[in-house]
Image (cartoon, rainbow, N blue to C red; front, side):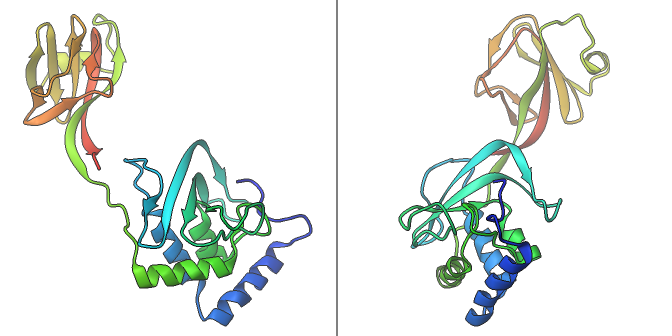
Length: 239
């Protein structure tokens, strides 16, 4: 991400040239943008597996970055993910061979739909001919769009290793709870609505039998440390 045009190219010229390709094919920017979005949405971020199938022809990989890019032509368009589409010859305008997967920035569907812009002859630019081919494949074969599977859980959050301090209002939970649960020896959970705080005299492991109102209690590390730990009810992606 970062460069949208090759030196000497203008935004207007690139838009005009690529629009002519779509016009001759009888395909709209909305159609190719929508199809490309379906391809990108086929990637299951929960599994993180490689070469995930979009349909019988296309597959997709992806990577997520810590930061994000803001489009210089529309400040509402951002990207922090790159996708790599395989199954047809590479469609990037520059820097890659025909055997390579096509690199597609997260914002590309909206660049196409909102700005009619496929980028210039740069590594993230994609040829409109490739986008048309992807559109035709998705129209014919469909796309296995990932729909996250979720379950309700209570999960641990903020933590402080000191039971004597009021930790973001934790004393109010302890003094005026809606419900109280003894979830382990020396560990009490004080609930108010769908949030709570565990006051623990010692570290303990979370077991499958630990529940709050019939919902499992979970932690990213499988344990609760000595001190105070907030607990929150939320939808957890499980597949």
